[in-house]
Length: 196
Length: 141
Image 1 (cartoon, helix red, strand yellow):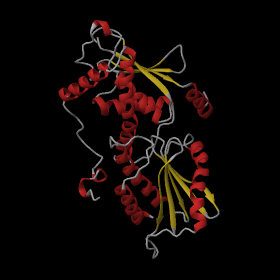
Image 2 (image 1 turned 90 degrees about the vertical axis):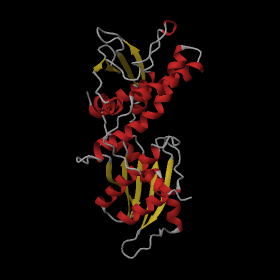
Image 3 (image 1 turned 90 degrees about the horizontal axis):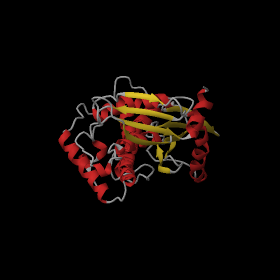
Image 4 (image 1 turned 30 degrees about the vertical axis):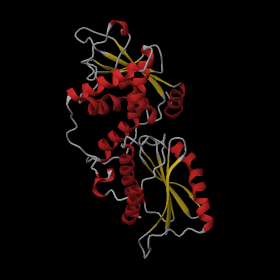
C-alpha cells in the first residue's frame, strides 16, 4: 500500500498558530460530557469517564510539547524533566500554554501532606460555558483536564492521581484546583536520587 | 557493518525492531549478522535496559550515548520524554551520527503516537515507518 505524500510521516510537526475556535471546542466538549453522563450512574463515575478520556491524551501531549519546545526551536537541547518540581513547572507553563494559550495561575505545594501538589486555574477554558445543575453539584467537568495532567505525569514516570475540585474565590466562580497526589514511590525515588 | 535497532515500550516490551545494514564503505544496505548474533541481539539489548533505567534518572539528557558494550559491539541508548527507549547495537563509535539518527527516529515515533488509532506500547507495524527507518539508516549510519 502506497500512501505517498498524504502519510502521517510526511506532515510537519511545527505549527506556529495552534489556536482553534472556542465555540467548536466548547461544542465538542459539551458532547463529550453529555455522552459520558448518559452512560454513568453517579457523579464519580462520570468524572472517572472524563478522566479516562483525558488520560490517553496526556502521553501524546507531553511528547509533542517536549519535541516542539526543545528540538524544533533554535535551542535544540535534548532534555527531559527529572524532578517533581520541574515537571510541574513544565505543566504549569508550557503545557498549559499550548493547551489553553495561557499559563496556569498558581502552583502550590500542600503544607500538611508531602506528596500533594496543586495546579490552580482561575478561569478554566473548557468549562466556562458549562452550568452544573443542582443535583450534580459536586461535579467538576475539569476532570477531563485532570486526566490529561495525570496522563502527562504517568508517562514521565511520576505516578500519581489527579482530581479536579471547584474552589471559588471572589471574582473567579469557576476557579479550579487540580490536586496532584503522587505515589509514595515517586517521593522516595526523589529523596534517594536528589537527597532532601 | 550491521546495526540492530529496537524501540522498547514502558513495560520493557519491544514495539519495533529491525536489523539495519550500512550503505557507507561499499555496503549495500543489507545487515550481515551471523546466525548466532541474530539470536543474541535481542538479549544484548535487553540486558542493557537496567543500565538505561539507572542512567535516565542521573542525567536529564535524552541521548545517553554509549552505555554498554559486548565483545566489540556497543549499545547506544536514547530515552524519549515519555520513557520509550531507543536502543542501537553497533560496531563502531560514531556519536554525532547516531544522535542525529535517534532525533529523527524520535520525530517518526512522535508522528506515530499522534495517530489516534495508536496507543502507547502498541507494536508499530506500519510499512511506511519501516521504510522511513531504512531511509534514515542510509542517511546517517
